[in-house]
Length: 110
Image 1 (cartoon, rainbow, N blue to C red):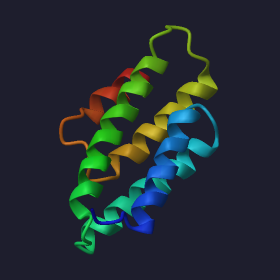
Image 2 (tube, one colour):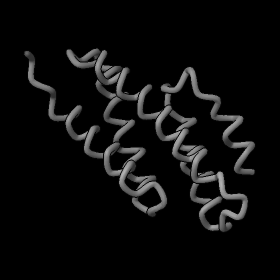
Image 3 (spheres, one colour):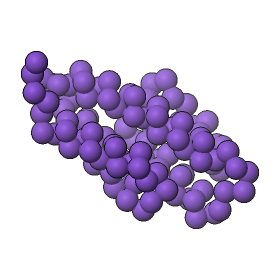
């Protein structure tokens, strides 16, 4: 078994941090850092680029579902709506999520 690259491990840590605190101010930082590391692995065609692609697709879908769940109460406070909108806009800037309708999620928030 080939060891995972340090960058892939760091990306996993950032994405795990989002899971733990989607509503926190740090979520945007971890989202950008994690997905940037994954995209870098893919662009460089690193040995774990396939794993990075799968991880990016999986986490983007997972985060979109988490954002959708956070919107289920109809009375989401405005600061949280702004935070979720910013996260959704950040998600849309990455090449992952072919199966996730980010524009529809953005429309639900707006």
